[in-house]
Length: 348
Image (tube, rainbow, N blue to C red; front, side):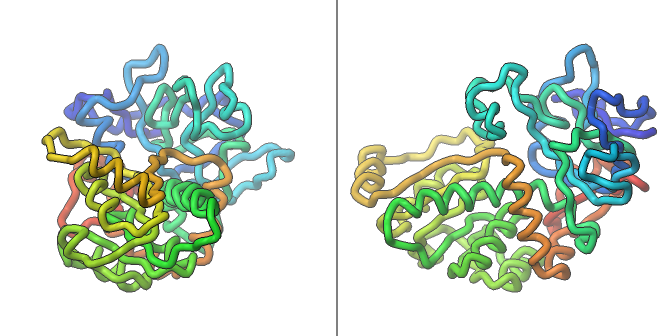
């Protein structure tokens, strides 16, 4: 079978090659790979050396945003041939810390977790892959190709779950949310905010389709420029860009008792002037919570599956703006101006 393999940090060594069938140790479910989503993490692995090779291997099968159809399943697995499934990314460490032992590997404390397609485990970028039943999530077949959005949606399901938990510290309830960034993560964050009945505002650099139209069509108000120019006083901020200065701008605009959730990783190194005393006073006097979130547990995948199943299928389909064959994986890493979500067809 064919697989997309890389050497982290060596962009010129991406290739599609023949590899052995997936070993049974990877899991009892044999799955036909259908689609593979691409995100910034994949670019970081290929070009910047993020990621870890599996022990004893000199190449990594990349890919953590999966969608496949079950080919073989044990009778007691809870799955049947033909089921559409997504593989969970993270696995608990071999000697589980307290969170990992409770199924909260997204809160691993010792860093010894592994991740499919990222850290010490081959990913889902192959024509067939195996997965443990407990790390497979069934998706509604009516979603079709949109099922590949489940993994990124799980990250936002966790972000909103944690935000809701923090908001519950008082009797006050938010009305307005600001999402910064109109990429796939930001648009999925907006979708989930609108589903909660919030007035959602999306802020991005440029007012250009399809991002701006997708934001408006999901029920959000779209803005460009900086936070101050948007004129929004958010009760909740879901920050999806990883742009450091924007975090501080968001805390300035936020209302008292607000919650600011950070989902993006900063890639820049340019210094920016920040008054730390002013920021401290603002957070303390405003009862403001700023927290970061990464990865997702099984329950977040299940929450995301419900959110996608209830969403407008036509809107979800518009998030997938480009589909490429396996041989064009390296090209797919290069974003086009009108890209939102790029996916690889593992059958082509």
